[in-house]
Amino acid sequence: MNRLFVFILFSYGFISQAAAQKQFNAGITAGFTATQVDGDNWQGYYKAGLCGGGFVNTMIGERYSLQLELLYTQKGSKHNPDPVNSPFSFYEMGLSYIEIPILFRYHIKPQLIAEGGISYGRLLTSQEEDMYGILPDDQAPFQKSEYAVHGGMDLKVYKNLHANLRASYSILAIRFKPQISGYYIIGGQFNNVIAFSLRYFFTENN
Image (cartoon, rainbow, N blue to C red; front, side, top):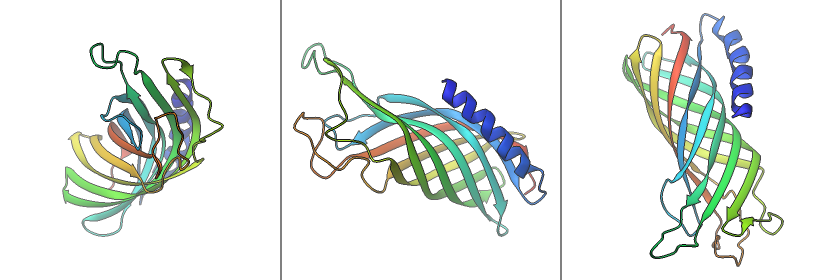
């Protein structure tokens, strides 16, 4: 939580400078994520996390714009024990990233925008835990860099406030090496993320 707060403050200072330029729209964003990791033994978006940061965009046509973002995003995977079928199957993977998405945006209506693009992410922290405790990461370390594809919708809900719903997926595996523990499969693991956020524009010049 402290890292997210510091990062949002940093983003605010960086993005507010861009907002001073008349041709740019800029703002801050905060929200939450529901995530899973494809390639482990579990399914379902049961790992909850936070996301936040800042963004700058500019119009490149009557209905098109480009957006650059600087985000802190929590990802991972979680499985809670099933008291009937598998009472001792607790597992949790927690990952946090700094991400830089670049998005192409199509303005369907003044209040509704479709967006898609790619991002580069840098891993900040990683931790895995099961019913026996924290797992070592020396046999199957996570990749320090993540490349992901994004797609979503942005809806203006009130004046300078927008709601954003976005899905993202790793282009390359976040971890390649398999392990015998049962949490990994050959072929690697991939972040699978659904994010909902609120976005506040300092100015809207489109």
